[in-house]
Amino acid sequence: QVQLVESGGGLVEFGGSLELSCAASRTISNVHTMNWYRQAPGKRRELVATLNREGSAAYPDSSMKDRFTISGDSAKPTVFLQMNDLRPEDTAVYYCNIEAGFWGDNYWGQGTQVTVSS
Image (cartoon, rainbow, N blue to C red; front, top):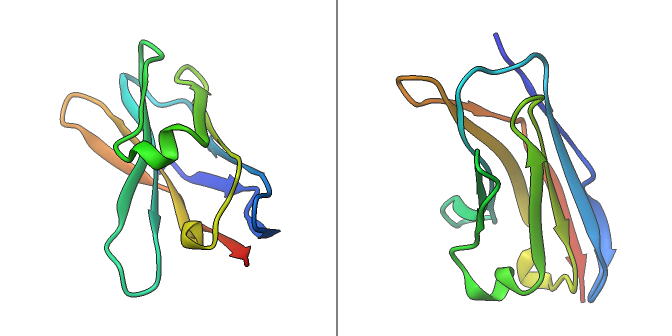
């Protein structure tokens, strides 16, 4: 059973920065995408950033594209999320996700809390 272990969350002031990290407990074959999601209280989980196996990144929300950077190595696999200019609305639990394999298996981390004070 593969486990994804996240780290790097915490409390930060408005305008501050954090870097989240995620590492798998063992190698995963045929990684399709590595992703970060977040879920704020009372809201649906949303995609923050995605990185495909070719190394191309995408950010569904334009406000995050300018402030967040996803990076990683699908061979390990590890994935990072550098977050700059953080705002209170970025407060959420952030989850690492890896989609892999012929059937598109999904692996999830346990989540790491990010809190941005105003």
